[in-house]
Structures are given as structure tokens and as C-alpha cells.
Image (cartoon, rainbow, N blue to C red; front, side, top):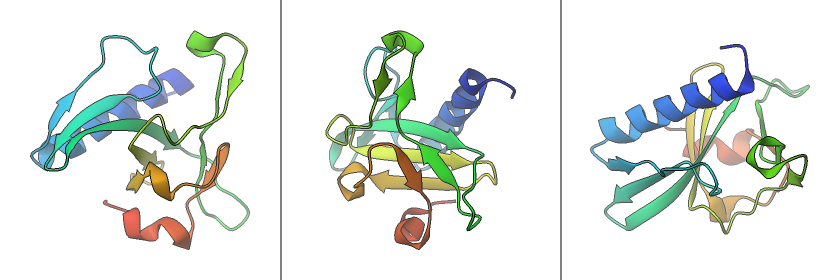
Amino acid sequence: ASTSKKKGDIGLGRAIAWYTSKGYTVCLPLTDSQEYDLVVETDLGLKKVQVKTTEHRNKYKKFVVELRTKGGTRGDKVCFFDKSKSDVLFVVTADDEYYCIPCQELDVISNLHLGDKYVEYKVK
């Protein structure tokens, strides 16, 4: 996977596979103009899921997730992460670890460092 678009596609595929393996119904939006990537039907209702992938690590060897988006369908504008637009952030790391983080637990809008604070949300 060379481009960030391809890496995003791989992350999306892994998220779909993970949710499906847990018995959830996964719905895909028809377009990419919304700020979430999947809708998952859970026991608690429908959940909007944003999927992110990361290969980047900080100086403490923890993965860093780029939450803001640049360009793409929104032109050259930088869009910061808005936790009110999604219910869950699903992260796939280069070590093939998965995190399923409730968006209300996030207090960052640009970069998320996957340190001890988020270890309880690691699902694989």
C-alpha cells in the first residue's frame, strides 16, 4: 500500500471485517462526503464510525493518528476532527493492532497519540 488512499482503503476493509466477525451489520455510505466511513448496527443502535490508519510513531514509540484531514473532497482546506460527527474512532496500526475508541473519550482535534490512555480500547 503506497498511497494514503490505498492505506485508508485497507483500514476500511479491516474495520468492516472486524465488525462483521463480531456479528454486527455494517452499512457503507454511498459517497465520501460525510465525516464518517461506516455505520454499524449494534445492540445500542446505529453507530457512525470513522476509520483511521497509522504507521507513524512518536519519540516514545507510540503510534500517532492524524485526525485532521487535508484536501480530498474538501479542497485544500484543513479540517480538524470534530468528535460530534462520529460515535466511534476505529484505528488500524501498522502493527495490525485495532482500537475502537468512543469519540466522546477524545480530547484532541489534530493528532492522537495511542499511549496508555487508550490501551483499554485496543480490540486486537
